[in-house]
Length: 211
Length: 230
Image 1 (cartoon, helix red, strand yellow):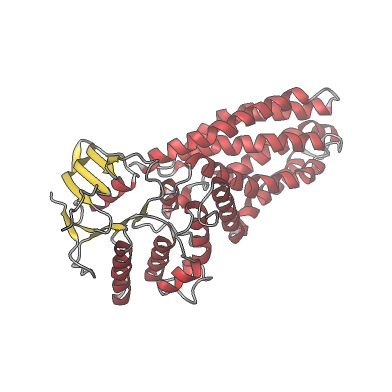
Image 2 (cartoon, each protein chain N blue to C red; image 1 turned 90 degrees about the horizontal axis):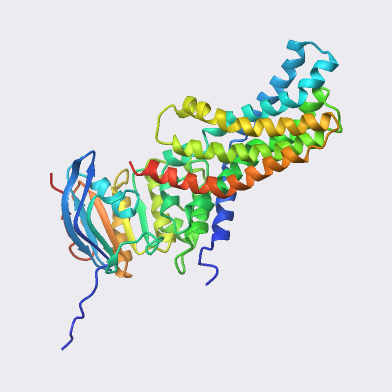
C-alpha cells in the first residue's frame, strides 16, 4: 500500500481576477496546476484568455486574488526563467535567422540539459532553414521557430497562447507531441485555444473562462 | 554546468551581439545620421559665406549641435521594434535583471549611431576650419556628451513607448535635457579655442555621464515594465 503524499501544486490561483478600468476582464478563477499536468484554457474571443496568460507570465500585475508558485506566494524573482510565455508576438527578430535568434535566447536563459540549437530546430521541422532570415519564413515556420525556443530553454511551466494558430495539421500534431513530452518530463503547461484540441496522454485539466 | 547556466556577463554579451548584428543587417540605417550630419555641415559655409573668422567662431557649436540632432533621428527606434515583435516581453521574462540588459541595448545603440558621428567629427570640424589643436577636445566632449544623450533619450523613449506618434513628444521632452550637455561641451571647445583650461566643463559632462550610466537603465526598466503592463 502506498501513501500518496500531498503534493504542492506548481501553480495555484485563488480567486484570481483582473480589472481593466474597473471592469472585470474575467471572473474570479480558482485552479491548480501540478507538475506533469496540462491545462487547457477555454473561452470565446474576448473572454480574457490572453490577459490571464500575460498575468500568469508576470507581464501584468494581478488585480485581486492570490497566485502561489510551489506553495509560496508568487515572487517574480523566484520563478524567473522557470516560466516561458509564447504569445501572439513570437519574440523573434525577423532580420536574424532562427539559429541566431535561439543563440541569443540561450545567452539570456541558459540551455536545457542535452538540448542543442540544431537539434531543437530539426525537432520542429526547420532543418534546412536554420540560417534563413526569419523574415523569409512562412507564418507557420515562424511559429515553429518560436516552439524550438521552448524546447531549448530550461523552463518548467509553458504558457502557450494560441499555439495552434497558423500551424498545419502536422504542426498541430507536433505541438501536441511536444506538450506530451514536456509533461512526461515533469513540466507543466497551460494552453489557450478556442478550437477543439486532442492531446496525447490523458485528459487535460480544463479551465473555463466565463463571462 | 557552466555551459548551461546563463550568467549575467554572458547575457550582456548576447544582448550586445544581437543588437550590433541587427544594426549590421540594416547598415543603411546607420549611414543615415552620418549623411545628415555631413550634409548639414557642408551647407553652413554656403549659407553663411566662407569667411574664416565667422566659421572659426561657430565651428565647434555647429558640429556639436549637428551631431546631437543627427542622433535624435535614430533615437525613437531604440525600443520600438522590440516592443512590436514581442522581444521585449521575452526579455522581461528572462531570468536576467532588466536594467543591465537595457544598458547593453543603449550601448549598442550608441555604438551604431553616435560612434560613426564621432569618427567623422574631425572631418566636419576641418570643413568649418576649426583649428586642429581643438579637434581632440571636441572629440572628447562628444565622447562624453553623446552617451549622455543616448541614456537620457532612452529613458524618454521608454516613457513614451506606449504612445503613438511619440516622435514629437520625445523631441520636446529631450530638448531641455540636452541643453546642459550642449552648454558644457560647447564651453569646453570654446575654452580650448581661446587657449583657456577646458577641463572643468569636461568634468561636469563626465559627472553627468556617470550619474546617467547608473540611473538611466533603472529608469528605463521601470518605464518599460509600465509600458508592457497595459
